[in-house]
Amino acid sequence: MNAAELCRVLLVGPVAAADVPELADEGTREDVRRRLADAGCELAYTPGTERWLVRLGGPLPRLDAHDPVLAPDRDELAVLATCWLHLRFLPEERVRAGEPAATGEPWLDPDDLAELLGARLDGGGLAVALDRLCGMGYLSRHEGRLVAGPLLDSLDEPAAAEQARALLARHQRLASLRLRAAELATGGSGGVHAAD
Image (cartoon, rainbow, N blue to C red; front, side):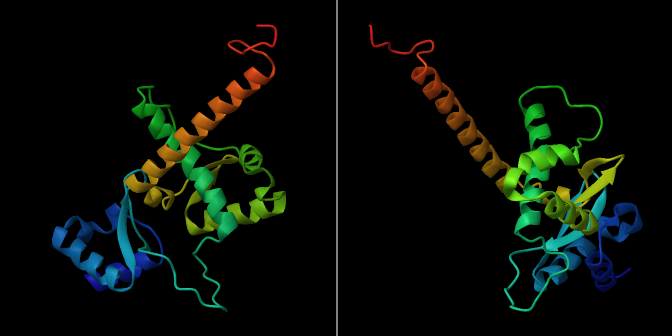
């Protein structure tokens, strides 16, 4: 396949690297990247699934009557962020912290996901969001569990991981401060008592 054909194939969905050996050639890959960049897209490789895919290189222009088929809406982005956190970021952080890598592919129970998202989405809204995200290739269902789809790997970027680390550290500091405040309010260890 030539670069134009590769672009067309990639624009309709992720492709197994074995099916497009032309992308192993650096010159062809750069030609495909250049052509995709002209349309505001990026070529990405997902090592976990050994697939090439195309993703948007920036935000979509807003059009009043436009209903993008592949662009997640706000609710879907909330589900996607939660899934990325639990299926990609946290498992990698555990390995970074020196814990042994878990055996098998990380997964989420849809009921646990509903609990994590709380009031953000009702049951029906979550089901619709999951159906769309599975259809887009961000998630897959396997034996009643949610696992990463090929597009979820495309979100693994150093900037996203750094931002997630900063938010996680902030959350941990706030949780620690709340615990300490509760201890002080109940006269727990280290608290100052009125009789002292």
